[in-house]
Image 1: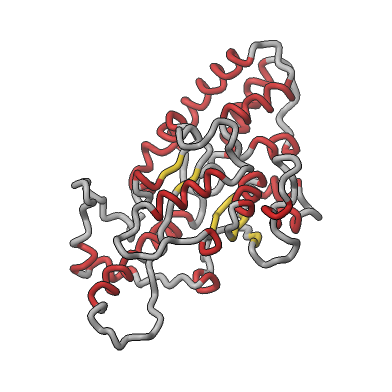
Image 2: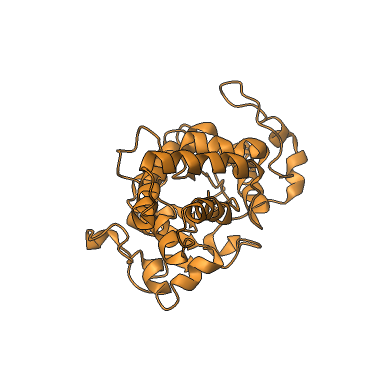
Length: 302
C-alpha cells in the first residue's frame, strides 16, 4: 500500500526527520530507509530507533512518531496511475458475469477473458491503515473487506512479516476461500504481486509469485547495479533463507516499472473490458455483497 498505492513514503520520511532534527541527529538516509520499507511497523520502528541512537526511549519515540503521522497522513493521495489500475482490475468482474450467462453453451471451447481477483497485503497495522485510507474509501472499496490482510492480522505469526512470504500466501488464501462455488483455486504462480519495497519483492518471490517492482526513485538509486538481485528476491533482506524459495537472475518472473501509469495488462494475460460495461444490467445488479453490504459503484470512476 505505502509507496505503491499511496504517496506516503515522503511523509514517513518527514515525520522521522522532524524527530531526528529535534534531537540533533542527521536526516534519514535512503540506505537506512530502504531497510524500513515494507516491514511491519514495530520491526521498522525498532530498526530506525537502533540506528538513530536517540536519547529517548523506544516508547517515547513511538509516541512522537505516531502523533506526527496523525497530523500528516489524513491527506494522503494515490500515486499516479493507481486509481485507473484499481478501477480497471475491479471491472474485470464483468467477465465472471458474462461467462455465467454463456455457460449453457457447452460447445464453446474457446478461451474466454476472466475476472482478476485482487487482495490487499500491507504491513500497516489497522490503526495506521484507517488513518491513511478513511478519506479514500472509494478508492479502497475495490478491496473487499475479507480480502484485506493488514500487518497486525492475527493469522500472521508475530515476526513473520515481509520479507517472509506469509502475508502474500495469506492474501491468496483470502481469495481462494471466497471464490464462487466450483471455481478452481488460484495457485501462487498465477499471482502477480505489485510492490515498491525490496523486502516486499523478496516476500513475493519467496511466495512463488510473479512481481512488479515499482519503487520510489530514490530507492531505485540505492540499488543501481543490483536491480537483478532485487527482482530475483536475492537481496537476502531476511538473512540466509532456503535457496529454493528464491528466484533466479533474469528468470522473467519479476520486472521493474518506473510507474504504474498505462500498465500493460495484455502482457500478463489480463483483458480489461471497456468502461461502458458498467452501465450494463449485469453490472448494476451486482451492487450488493452476500452480507447485504452495498458496494459503491465507483470502480469506473475512481
